[in-house]
Each structure stands twice: as structure tokens, then as C-alpha cells.
Figure 1 (cartoon, rainbow, N blue to C red):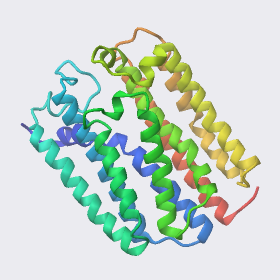
Figure 2: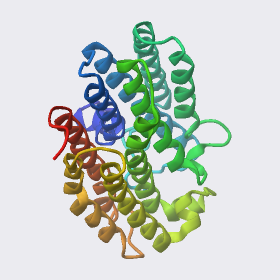
Figure 3: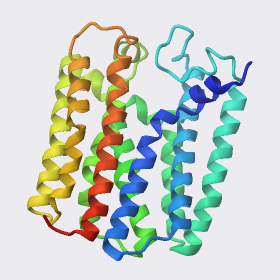
Length: 302
């Protein structure tokens, strides 16, 4: 087994880490906007811990998809380090547990500087990360995968990142997290559209399988639209400035993702180009949202 750069890239899947990086950034910048102070140590610890948990979740997915026979040498778009690169399943699981250990150590540091109640929340998030593909009833095989992933990685992480900086949480933070939550959920929708035929054959009951291809593409389009309308609502009703309209710069990427997914009958390989555009949309939207929040903390209204 050759452990070169490509091996580690496929194993860790850094292109998926936008789902961890964006919520921490948005929650922290929003905290700075409210309190005009930012604890860099807590920010970095939260950032690394979130990424460690997500990478571990990716590794659990790699391990259990192999164990259940869902990943084969003919599979497209998966990490594939076990079936394609010959990585030991034991190595993959050990690395995942090691990353959970790192996240736990960082979690203790975060709790020591904020609140020990966060230990319970952190432990629950790690449990959900494992149960997403592990255990007898994987969340990823149900229609609720998008909801759990978006809820915990989006709203959950944004709220925790905000709380450890400010010492409080409010409804406004939850409302601000909604479009990020939706976009993170849509990353999984894109993955599941690509894998729909194979997942159905293996007995999975994802939301995409229930909606069908055309219904899933319509759902994708509607949820993208919802995110941008939500930003308008935050400006008109939530007291935010027009700086948040910077998120609209991601609309062309979102539209392109929908258009590339639209033709029915594509192979998983043909849908890869569409799939990668969804995390790209999340990155563009999230960075623009964070930038808008940062600017409005200095220039509140336009």
C-alpha cells in the first residue's frame, strides 16, 4: 500500500471539510460582530476539533460501507482507500478513533475556558458522527441524513462556536445558521443523487430514493432558492445590513449544480462534476456570509 499524497487526500477528503470550516467561521465572526472580541485559542480549537470529527465521520463511512459490501472496486466517487488502495480496515478505524481522541482533548480545553456542560453536547455530536454510518441503523441510510448532518454540522456548530466566544446563545444565532444548515444538508443530497441507483439496490431509504431523480433535483433547486430568500429575510426583518447580499455571488455555482444534475440517466461518474459544485456553493456562500457579518460589525448599515 503506497501512502502518497493521493492516498491521504482520498482518505481524509479535505474537499468535504467546508461543512466544518464554514460553520465555525460564521459562528465565530458573528460572535465578534456582537461582542467585538475573539478568543483565538478557542477559535482554533473549535476549528480543529470540528474538522477532526468530520474526518473521523468520513473514515467511519469508509469502514462501514466496506464492511457492509456497499463499496466495491467499481464504485465511483467514494474515498476508496480500502477497496482501491488496499488500506487496512483496522487502520481506517484506528485513525478515526484517534481523531475522536484529538477532538475530545480539544473539547476539554474548550470546556475549561467556557462551560463544562459542553462536554455532553460534544459527546452527543461525536455519537451522531459515529451513528451516521455505524451501528445497526445508520442515519445515512434513512431519509433523515440531510437533517442530522445539516442540523449538527450547521446549526449545532455555529451555535457552539458563538457560545464559547460570548457565553450566551440567542434566537438570532439560530436563525443565522439556517441557510448554512440547509447547504450542508444539500451536500449529502448531491452525494445521494449520484449514488441513488446503487443505494436503492442495497436497501437504503434515503430522501433522494423516496423523491426519485427528478424530484430530488427539484428539491435541490428549491432549497438553494430558500437559502437566498432567507438572507433577504435576515436583512429585511432581522436587522442585518445589505452586506449579506454578498452571498448572492454563489448563485451561479448553485444554478450550475442544478443544471448539471438535471439530465436523468447519467452515470455516477458523469454526475461527479455536478456533485462537487454543491460544497463549492457552500464554501462561497459561507465565506461571503462571514465576510458580510465582519464588514457590518464595522459599517452596520448601508
